[in-house]
Amino acid sequence: MSGFDLMESPLFTYALRLGDDALILAQRLSEWASRAPEIEEDIALTNIALDLLGQARTLLDYAGVVEGEGRDEDDLAYLRTEREFFNVHLVEQENGDFAHTIARQLFFSTYQLALYEELLSSSDETLAGVAAKGVKEAAYHHDHAMQWTMRLGDGTEDSHQRMQAAADRLWPYTAEMFEPDDVEKSLVGKGIAVDAASLKPRWDRSIAEVFSSATLTMPHSVWFSHGGRRGVHTECFGYLLAEMQYLHRIHPGASW
Amino acid sequence: MPDPELPMVTIGDLGIVRDVSTADGRVEIVLTPTYSGCPATEVIRDDVREALRRHGFSDVIIRTALTPAWTTDWITEAGRRKLAANGIVPPSPAGSVIDLSLGVRCPRCGSVETKLVSRFGSTPCQAMYRCTNCLEPFDRVKPH
Image 1 (tube, rainbow over the protein chains, first blue to last red):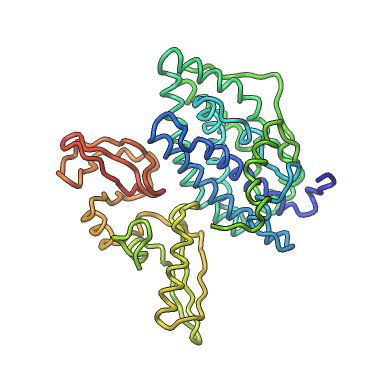
Image 2: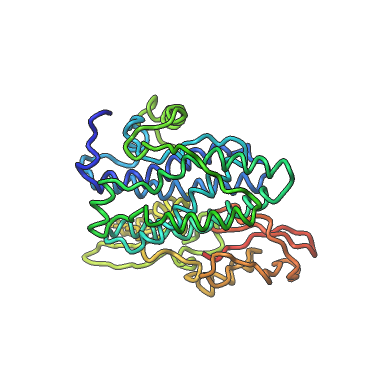
């Protein structure tokens, strides 16, 4: 939808952004079901997806309440078009090989953990509540990603190369998580939102430590991808939505 | 009322029933989810409603409270005993994210020679272990 005014209700936009990050990453991770390298990992990735889906449900439900037009979590997940999703590009990137999925997990969970820790003191009761539950889950996801990054980075020659290639490939998608804009600024002033840019030094330090232990080289990039926060997405996103929304669109209101 | 996924314990044992109040024949129950995406949450809500209906309470409000967030420290002593009696190792005190899992005792042979197989198990709240003494696999409710 063009002409969507992000500033009409900054809280609505903000709740969608947080909810969409969780929802889209949950969708990507669930693509691993029955395809992970080993059964324990199959269960791990889908459990992480489940945590994120739970967070997304609360956030989208809340966005619907804030909007006040009667849309529920299903309407918002299944009936919005590509330009109405506000997740960062990182979470929509394809799974790639296992190293790519782990690099994406490491980059995102490090950010989400820091974000939720700050969001705990939000003046918005629902956002603080999501953070209170989510912070424990994010810590677990972060731990999982960190352990695998070290195991792959400091593993065999092949696993090291793949982990490095994955980190290099996804690096340009990391800056967007910390980009400030008017939506966020207007809510930070009221003590509702987290100033994401303030999380960046901590994120950088944490990633550098993990990379050092994993014998990986810190990636660098001359370009960074952005636009997700205002509804402009990368090519792979349309395909993800098509799969995620197909059933609900062809059988509206279908339930188990 | 039994938990749908860990039926040896009640939802009271798990500490997810946060409040029960009645006023003018209306019952209000406050529940809290264990994990954000725990699939049992909705089943529990339906089960509570049905159980109250069977006992003659039709005017029921079930609220979900996200804060304070559930912690495994709220599992009662009785709940811990029931888990252990069913071969599931109860959690140690929560608070440390990096659970070193030292001294996790095999529920079958009692050996502490056990190994974490995966931090993620058959339900969101459990992790998988294996005993290197008797070789049996077992579950443990992870500190959360």
